[in-house]
Amino acid sequence: MLKLLRLARWSLAALVFAFPAAAAAQGKPAQDSQAERQQVQPYNNAPVWRDVRKEGQEHYTSIKGRETGVLVQSAGETWRQIRNNLVTVWGGFALIIALAIIAAIYFAVGPVKTHDKPTGRMVPRFSQIERWAHWTVAISFCVLAVSGLVMLFGKHVLLPLIGYTLFSWLTSLLKNLHNFVSPVFILSVPVLVLIFIRDNLPKSYDFAWFAKAWGLFMRNEHIPSGRFNGGEKVWFWGFVVGLTIVSSVTGLILLFPNFDQTRSTMQLAWIFHALSALLFILGALGHIYVGTIGVEDAYQCMRTGYVDEAWAKEHHEYWYNDIKSNAGGGAPAAAGGAVPAGAPQAERK
Amino acid sequence: MARMKFLCDAERCIECNGCVTACKSEHEVPWGVNRRRVVTINDGVPGEKSISVACMHCSDAPCMAVCPVDCFYRTDDGVVLHDKDLCIGCGYCFYACPFGAPQFPQAGAFGLRGKMDKCTFCNGGPEEDRSAVEFQKYGRNRLAEGKLPACAEMCSTKALLGGDGDVIADIYRERVFKRGKGSEVWGWGTAYGPGKPGAAPAPAAGAKS
Image (cartoon, rainbow over all chains, first blue to last red; front, side, top):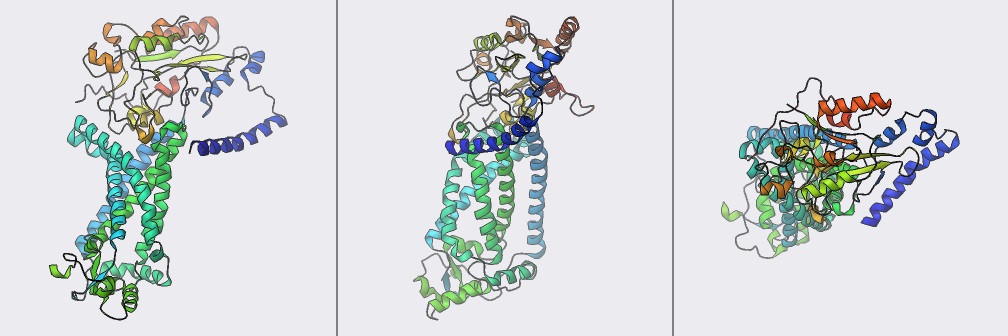
């Protein structure tokens, strides 16, 4: 990691310095140095002050440490403006709008219901390993999301309510949870991805799903799909794969300040970390909604691993046909063996 | 009411690091933490200039603006202080500060930095003035004793001035007139710059509980 960082820094530095150095060598006189300048204008310190403000310019200091030789870093103010204005204000609006849309769909249209009566025959949908992988990622994600949100918005939302002492204690706890739960998330996502990657490969009928998705949520329309529908595949590739990579890489840069990354590296990492995490949370709100109250019986399915045949047929028809034919056309429950006690949701009804 | 500021005269600073030593000794700052440092530009070549830098106690302090637990506050004298009991050690003040003032006792893996430490303008913290707890957490409270910061008081060439902004600006102006050069008041634009037009400095928040 350290070697990689150094390598990246040097190659970047080589790129940056190669051009001006070549340009300077071609004809620009070197009167930009203070030594030259004070020959001509003894009272002029302009080159020194230019050096002071040059971003990332390190000078001599006997105090050893990260960037101690830098006098002024202007990027800090830029980072502050991006964090306090762009990320906090617009990120906050985005979250409120997303929650409002979900609430509107739930209260105005209602959850997606299964049309047919439950058959009482249960189909195995998620194995125990799949459920464990899912819930490990899900719970660690929720810890990271909640702690991250408190660190970003808590000052404006929670602090006025609970006061300085309690809020600081809570944020300190959440900050440490965030930092120590993150490895669980980073390590469990690849497992989840490996488990589900085959069933998330895009198929032609996924495009048809998108064309009709509006009808699914608004009018409870039936759309055939494979084991995972188009929406789930977008969630898988864009969020679970894509955004995990962005937030993990940027998060690791912030998690290990002991490698002496420069402040500008950490500012940049923070910006991408916050943006990817907010986007991830926005997506997760949708995912959690359709996985709990948004779609009837969806939560039971990930909890117990079994779904009713009627549900399977209605939401994932191609997958249902597949497992049915694999099971030799017999009762689908036979594919997964006996249904464990307590698992079938048919008994609830 | 005085508005406390630091001013370092680059024409006078000789990089003796007396201010750094004075600070460390006065406050018994832990190893690895340096509230003040001297940076030398063009070290060892003609045109060498040295500048002593620490927290400048900005008018619109970036550290205060980005702190997720709002642990910073400003005293009536314009000194930017923080409450170590509230600090969670996230390091955001360190990202935001233009002067590299915030220091952390650790830079450990998993973001374990410890409580932030920085120059207090020799004004302690939110604890009772001149109490043992205050000294242990923030160092000596010289302002409460009617004294000015140790670094500026100890400066052998009087390059580093610390005190009421109006007074030290007058001293500096007189110097510039006499020597006819070196009028750049280093760091003041960044620390005490105009900011938003018409914006008054935030009132002192007082003790936070």
